[in-house]
Length: 471
Ligand SMILES: Cc1cc2nc3c(=O)[nH]c(=O)nc-3n(C[C@H](O)[C@H](O)[C@H](O)COP(=O)(O)O)c2cc1C
Image 1: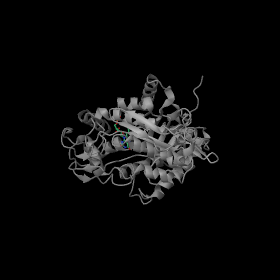
Image 2: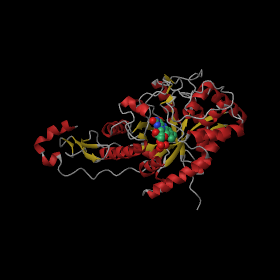
Image 3: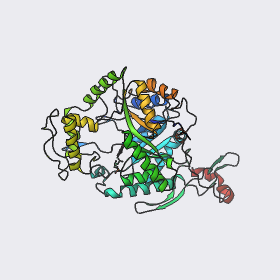
């Protein structure tokens, strides 16, 4: 039996000021004005994307106590941005990255449920965890959780949020004008959740939302992170772009999902990706080279490598060889507020030295190779073909696409690549549902059974008029 042709899932991502974006480009707009978010989201919807996606940064990066100029603004709080976008889009899912380490389930479940209501069922939550004491200090929780406990808390957080989202029966709100009954269920919203991290009980204030529960994504690749996603998420924002690595990750997550009692395809895999288009392949390669060298200048290259070396590398020529000193992972941190990319800095640097030797890389070439992030470079036909092939060969189920240019970078993708993917039958030509779950083809979670019998109307007919106050 031949494999079914997969529909590509596409998300659009707006970055902020960092080494993937070019704020200084003459065509770049604001990283924080609503007009930028609106343009990018409406462009994604024009291209029939599944969702719009925002990352989260809860601390500004610092280098030796000073703000790192490559990570300054452009990350306003996720939920207000998504709520505002709900008003100017109709079909696009709205997924926010929100930390499970520093928040509280009641508050966040309520915000996400509200977003789901306001958007008519388009809310999603990318659950991230953080072990970073520097970020935690902003929440008076510096170092409060050991790295290994992050996912225990995230698991409990999600279980508590589900309890809250499920606390209203789907038909609890009657709003029956003739009978004068607003609520059918006097127990609506009751919940209790007990765990090592959270011990909460009470009544949830928002009725069941259109999707029942927002769509859940996860970003993180440790074994704990993989199990967390395989056991309970709908999708993973993944960092794997090389087809062989991505296929391995795909197989691993599917096997974990089955082991944890879910269908193999329960979790969609969505790597980050960006693109550079050109009139010809040579043109695209030239454009790409120019963009990457503007993204990662000499100073930025030094600082990016400092995140692993943990030494001041400002004295090393970016166009010269790699620093001849060993990394100093135990020393006081040079760069703070950035996820550590190497568990073993010595091993990582040894690998980089070998690579630089083989490829004749300078310090800056290496930084571009390691931290640069453009996966699809070519003509629109080549990019469409590579994206489709990657998905059909089970490297992923789609991509979360970002561009170096805010907010108009996605325009040429939507104008030139989307029609080609549609012609191949790999991308929808129009939306067929109304919610994010519909876009992604995800099932709806079961609601709790019908409103319970001791209703306001039956049990307390004489207090009916007061029932409206409950809402
Ligand atoms: C593709 C990807 C995107 C991420 N995006 C964010 C983000 O926007 N905000 C954040 O605080 N952490 C983000 N993280 C960090 C993770 O939540 C987590 O803190 C880190 O990757 C370690 O998790 P792990 O040990 O499971 O890999 C991201 C991780 C990955 C892999």
